[in-house]
Image (cartoon, rainbow, N blue to C red; front, side, top):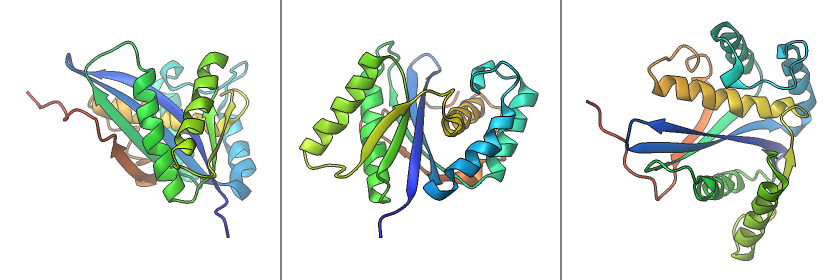
Length: 199
């Protein structure tokens, strides 16, 4: 029987010191049968007039409330990171992360993947990417679609998870601690640079 799990994917890019940049992709993995229930649990987090949750726009008190809610719902997270020299051109890094993520999700028999929608030209490149991978015999059966963050609260989960992880990288663990047990896998792309050394 095919898995009923589905993945909801968002990304983040951040500098790590002067010499490194991390492009990260996170997939929130939920049982398709529970998806609507999880959405209903997340909707109340939205403030009046707020289209969607976005970690960078939230106060610390709101961030704590968000991660506490994520900790309480039935979902797991997978993260893939590509570490490189700093660059403003990140589409190549995105493809590297997504390729690894698709491989991991396919290995878990997850076929339904929703990416947060960007510009249509960028969405088109995402579709072309998965078609090219499947043309090489990879990720057979995996299907991607795009949705706006304001239309599907399940996309708020990976945004918040990556925000919490970024805070940890900056020395603030308070947001990561409630959700760290939800992390199913944390991989780097094969081409990633070695982590920056400490002082």
